[in-house]
Image (cartoon, rainbow, N blue to C red; front, side, top):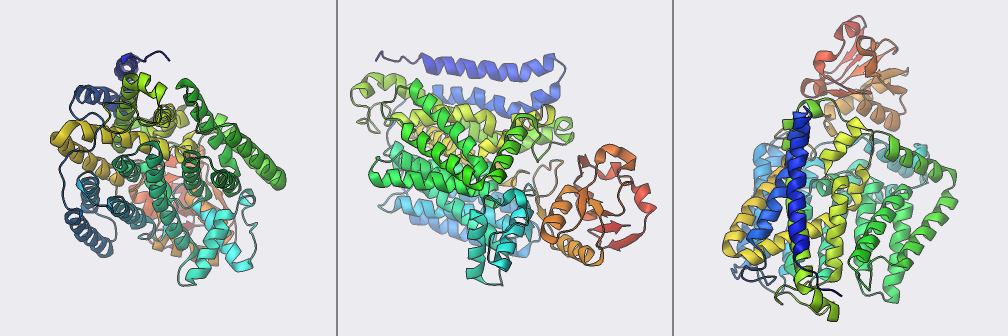
Length: 626
């Protein structure tokens, strides 16, 4: 093999800086300053990452070695963590809506976890650190899903809750929502959990608890996967920390649906693929592939696409022992084909709809005009993704640097290099993970995706479910290298950045629609108790057809069987005329737009037409006009 020089690092750094300049400058030249503003969250880390790598490059001391020699008894950080976490729980109990102080407290917990990881010692450091990471994840996730009565997310939870309830009531798989008939593994799991907990715990609450627990287990899987790629457990723990701060990981931990469960199954599958290929591991691989297919059949095409990226990256890095080989691809295709044949028309129809939506349809979280009209608001909510992108790019640049410095050594002994060996890359698969993370980044980070949804109707956001491991591992490696190479000053700087990253991750409108620091023009991701009580009262008294917003229609139609249709906002002033009755979520409308066929603000709602009807119900939060 020809020795790979350091030029790839330099070339990529120049390409990143040039792309950042073009991404911000070209929209200005074409008279689109809003797009330039939206692009800042990508441009800043694309410029900052090469600068950080240059500052802490291989000429610095301690290249690739252990973390700084500062050592503090982990019990100090743990005591502070538990005192602060207890105070935050008290805050949740004492307040109706999470205050900004809660987010600041969680950011401090992220900082304490970071200090525990990089300065702690002892044989049990890995288990202790993972426990604290799990605790902070569950605090953030459950502070939403168990704090507010009914978290709807992107509205699919209404249907999945209805299926779980039907299974509980009938003792058989449900047919209440036909499009979900072919994958009810998650619903059976939720229903079984509800049976164990009893009637005192609602089915949807059980689903929230199980989803949070599943994503907590995912942190252990990320750390385990990292350990198979690099011997220093600090790298694995920092990767798990990056996952906890990644908004998509937090959101899908809240979003208790089959797609979310398959994300963790994929993490387990990656761990199996990175393990020594014994007969037991091969059997486990088959089981996990089958679990993914059964849990959500429409997921496997996305998983296969990710596997294809991994295979291409491995060919580019010339790895003799690939993570994804012909056996894995054959098992995936065979399991998918057999299950599709078994599930027949339902799965095929669902898959065709998914492909059509991916290629030509807008996603279900369609973008209101305010996204482009209020770019500073949107850019502010993208800040945590900017932090994640920074660490990801730093990780890739350091991996390329190590590959360049150690190409001749890894050719002779590709698995023999260890941390602290003067700069050689420990595992060939780690570079593969980094390259895949870069390839998936445009499909995972939300700014470009939302613009594509709004302007071209392309829905590729589901790749976000299957990129957690790649983003977390690459970002964790970038953080690991910065702390390893920079000494105490870099550790303190990383602590400050990590704390800001944590604050932004838990306070943005994607994960904190209850009380975001900067509010976006989208609906709130949960229904209040008063709203649900009003829905039930209306359903008891009215049996005819009516129109409402999308969230209300999904809840009432799927959980109560109501004859509800989403109002067509394109009709403007006449949007209510074709409906015999109209339901309006007044409480939601006070602060946010309602999502009919498009988002409608309070000022644009045709109140005159509603006033001509009889207001037959009004709870203050919900009104009904007939």
